[in-house]
Length: 306
Image (cartoon, rainbow, N blue to C red; front, side, top):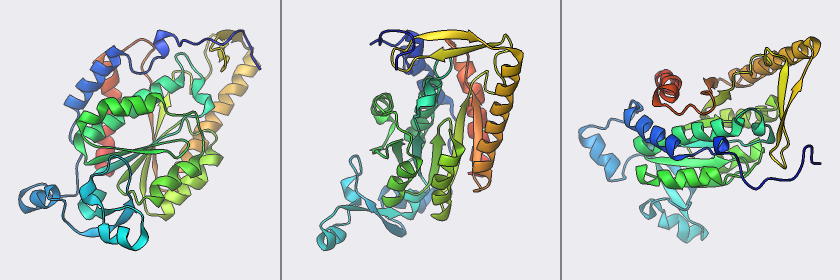
């Protein structure tokens, strides 16, 4: 059902996630970011073992587009007729699986929460491409793309831009688990509803994976607008309207938001995972300092615990 009018084929400029200005900020962020710590010794013989792609065999995962053909286990192919890649102990500790959950509620906010989430995903993914051996990008429908190296940045942004609107948490985590992905999992979403996310997080926990949730926090996430207005958006046409609410409704909305925050925190904490809320910069603010300050602070904090 259309709420306000005809469907618009063009998104406003403020709703384009990867504008030239943001791309410049992204490149500078990657240049300035601290190197992620690794449990792998990158010096001397250990470094040579890593670059020669040897090390302790840790299992198999399904071969995916973008994987190095040198990783293929041809003996496993001869037995099964399917392509599998060898997983080495060093590779386990230098990969990132980025789970991007694009649910319909991401259209909320001005600009839409979706814009902030895609930008945060681009930052996290770009840092992984620059610092780690591989990035596994998984979208809400379970589609998985393997990316390697800083030269894959444009491919990362293109994959994020065409990521489908899909909220299937179990399907999203099952694919990388079936493929044997190890290393850290980062889940970007608005995590709504928490009850749908809980089984997926439990599955990651049972398989011994480490996971960090990253939640874009808009200015009105803690309480409705103090002026007593709410912005609504027609998901078909993209048209927006501002609706006034009375004090009683505003109080009820504030209580619901508080309950949602507590449920989001609990669903991660109960499974031993961290949930980080990253403030969304104001609309139109694409200065490096605004984006770098909260993100790099969070990156350093997680580097200590991950």
